[in-house]
Image (cartoon, rainbow, N blue to C red; front, side):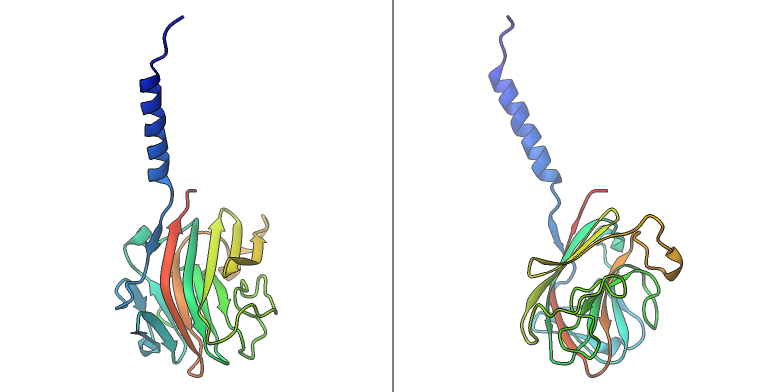
Amino acid sequence: MKKINTSAVLILLISVGFSFIAKKPKWISLFDGKTLNGWKVGENASSFKVEDGAIVVNGPVGHLFYDGIVGNHNFKNFEFKAQVMTTPGSNSGLYFHTKYQEKSWPSIGFEVQVNNSHTDWKRTASLYNIQDVKEVFVDDNVWFTETIIVQGKHIITKINDKVVVNYTEPEDIDPSNGRKIGSGTFAIQAHDPKSKVYVKDIMVKILPD
């Protein structure tokens, strides 16, 4: 019987292990906590500013789009998370699979709601107008983690690791309204001058196709 070179086998296993670790998706920051570098806004740019490490969202309707180098600002399968804090009566949203638009509400992509006490009953982590939730999972004036995961035709939203939406896109979905899973960038919504929301620690983990 041929003698097995155990040292060579061990080296091979270690090499494979390191290769696997190296390819494991890692969290990447999309916001430096100091500036809006890598982000782009059209009309009402004054609705977004940076204070104390967070993006303060407060003012007329506007959308701040990620336009930086990570993923060439075009994400298909990913895990996205951010620390968010709402103030009483506020409304905002986190968009994905969207693209830069100078004004008005984005016509392409999906909105994940940020709203714990606004008059709109569709609450935080709703997949807006697709799978909406009425339940409030977190209070105003408290930081919480909002997570969006997209893998293939599957979308999950979470608040503080609690799954809120678990949605699978039907095969016969009508793409005419722009709400069809594809790829695109992220955006943060300024909803109205009475709404004030804070967003920080914005991260993405790019997942394999």
